[in-house]
Image (tube, rainbow, N blue to C red):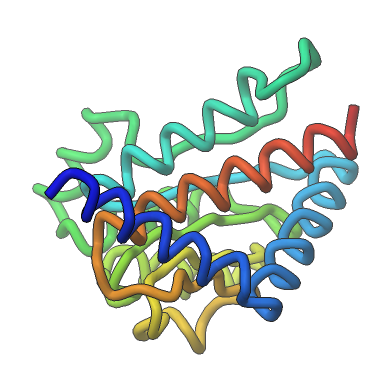
Amino acid sequence: MIKDIITASIAVKQQVLADEPLLNTVQQVIQATVQAYQADKRVYFCGNGGSAADAQHLAAEFSGRFYKDRKPLYAEALHVNTSYLTAVANDYSYEVIYSRMIEAAGRKGDILFAISTSGNSTNIIKAIEVAKNQGVICVGMTGQTGGKMKDLCDFLLNVPSKDTPRIQESHILLGHIICELVEKELF
């Protein structure tokens, strides 16, 4: 059973490796992120559940360090202020927890990494819609179909799988690739 799970994870990563359009999109995301940082823009992340943990993880890779001791890059996971999160969810709805924060902080040329394995999370979609209206570049990280996010994002990193754990494992892989190569380009 353990070997079967590892084999399934490897199989998805092999599909990612063979997916030239996806790899080209990853390269475009790297360039857009480098350009945003060079223009003194900010990078935001959002997700739910395991994707929120991935959002926080990847934001920390930019704002802390990846491989190099270097100056920090502004990156924020939008869910880490629990007082804000619970107040907005209670006073308005859970559906607007990210869109309200992007409305307050997002500026033209910033980047939003929006993570949803289904591509259909309402709060993520609302964040993308507000971000687009403000000129924020949207990078969707989803599963195979891209869900509703497919037509909303500037860049779609849709992992070729319908299995949530395998998608999330590949999101971290792609996120690490982006962090590593952005850091390498900038420093």
